[in-house]
Length: 373
Image (cartoon, rainbow, N blue to C red; front, side, top):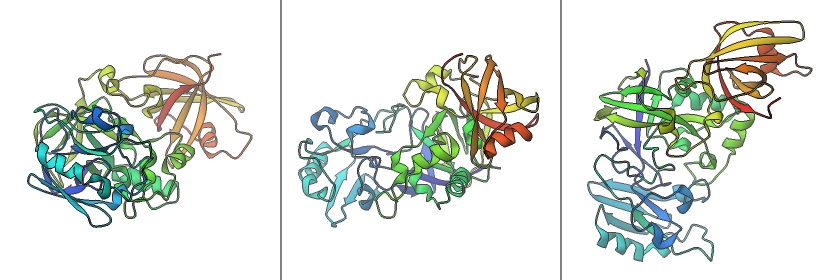
């Protein structure tokens, strides 16, 4: 059975996290103090503690060196240390100590590249409201991110690189489950220890994953490698706590049926177009001729198949980190028929779809792409 192997909170957006052995979660909130602080690039507009988009801040996707800083959280005291060993101290919820920290910030952040026209950076604190989502997350509703360690290992094999799971900056790391199984969780309810979550959507990976957490500098091109190898950028999922409780390392992780949120709720906070999500499916039938094969594919996802028309194409994501294209012949809410043409080249995904795919085989699909016929 899948289990919770790691718990992480990131008190300051884009800085290293703090590993926990257990945590209390309140319905509607993220992990305590997760992304509570951030270094802003936008000046006074972010000093009111309201949520802003990630590009308003210093972030790993854009700014090298952030993970060279270190932090410690002791009760209500947050200590930040720069690569030059300058320290600033902030008391949580205390405006005077936050202002004192900002008075030192120019020298504290000296090692980061800053554009001359950029407003003076500020350390800002997100407003804390009981029962509400209050972190400076990448999306206003991405309160808890969950990463499947097996998916990261499989991705590393596929792109021939040993990937440190800290590149993905997940709050909850789960293990002892098949790779990519979590991509079938959106639209379902998940139980981890005492806490229950509604799973919203997959997490699409950005250039922050290219930053080495040991050095603070980018040394890979993870999103580009994912797109080429897998045909998608999804690794991990976002979820929202709907039942309060405590989680501990080692807790079992399991889906407990369909969730209650409509698709509109899963899309409300932003994130990728539903068409780009890899959605779970099963091959229902496979038949054809020597030149063309027809597959009937049934989705296992709660929210069904996006609107699609004949002549468009699905991306079909297969085991082993390969993917191919299928021409849509027709599609309804839960089922689609696709044509697979014999490949004139040595394309392993198309060869498998044409020669080996059989009823009952699982896959993921995304799209539609292209023009209608």
